Amino acid sequence: MNCSLEPAAQTLLASFNFDEVAKIVFKTIVVRPTKNEEKELILRILQLLGRLIKVPVGQLKIMQSKDILLKLFVYYTHDDTNKSALITLHALCAKGEIFKKILLETHGFTLSSFDSFVTTGLANFKITREAGKWDDYVNLCSSLSTFIGCIPERSEDF
Image 1 (spheres, helix red, strand yellow):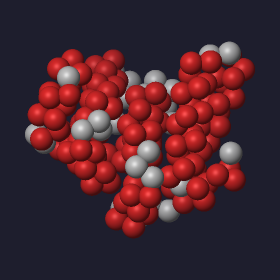
Image 2 (tube, rainbow, N blue to C red):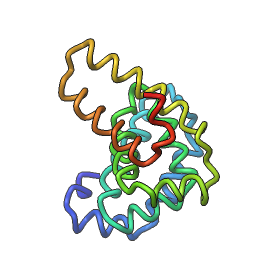
Image 3 (cartoon, rainbow, N blue to C red):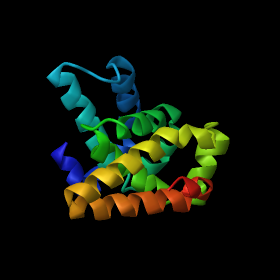
C-alpha cells in the first residue's frame, strides 16, 4: 500500500479494480471485526481509499459505489477507523454539489442518512476541544465545514 503515496502509483492503482476489492472486503468482514487481522485489513482499505481519492479515476469509482460510500459513513462512526474514513469523506464532500447529487439522486441517500455522521462529528468536536487536541480539532472543524458546504440542509444540526 505504500506505493500508493506517489501520484503515478495512485493513478495506476485507481485504474485497476480496487473498488471491487474494497467491496469484497467490506462485504466479507463484519462491520465491527474482533480479529486483529480483520481490523488491520479494514484500516488498510480505508487508507487506500484515502490515497486513491486524490486522482480523478479513483474519485469516480468511489463515488459510483454506493457500497463503498455506505461503509465510509459507517466506519466514520467507529473510533478506530474514524480518521481514515474521514479523509476520504472530506475529499468527497469538497466536491460539493456534484457529490451531494450523487448521494441523493444516484444512490438514494436521504438527509436523515447523515444522522450518524452528524452525531459522530459533534461528539468528536467536543472530545477534541475538551482534550486540547488542537491538530485534530482543526482538521475536524475543516471536515465538518466541508460537509456543511456539501449538505447545507444539515447545517442547523451544528
